[in-house]
Amino acid sequence: MKKILFVCHGNICRSAMAEFIMKDLVKKEGMEDQFYIESAATSTEEIGNDIYPPAKQKLREKGVPFTRHYARQVTKKDYKLFDVILLMDANNQRNIKHIIPNNPDHKIHLLLDGKNIADPWYTDDFETAYQDILKGCQTWLDRLVWEK
Image (cartoon, rainbow, N blue to C red; front, side):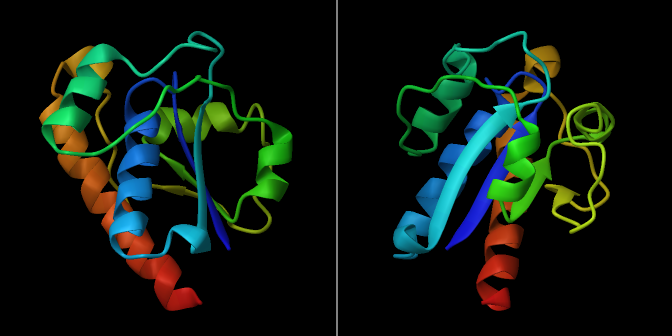
């Protein structure tokens, strides 16, 4: 079983969307039993909060099912628990180092190689965030299935 953790700043927009987008992708491929998928934040600002309403609306619009979400902060233990930790932007890369200072197993990556996924909390562009997250999830799903 491959274990994936998506991480962004608050865990109410991008990483939460990525969690449910990836769950939907693996379900459509009939591989639900082969993946464990979660999301988390680098900050403590939104702990316990659900997905931000405009992010929920975008998921609904795209037909991506989701459940009640409780934002949480990434922990040092997550490094051992997950096979891959996918970050949304360079700020997440910088901030996760305060929690997980080392990456000896090369588990921590940007969701999109060499490209930040802009935070729709600030840009209010949930469509672009959705498209970028979907592209990253599809790429990583292909990569992880190929590794098996």
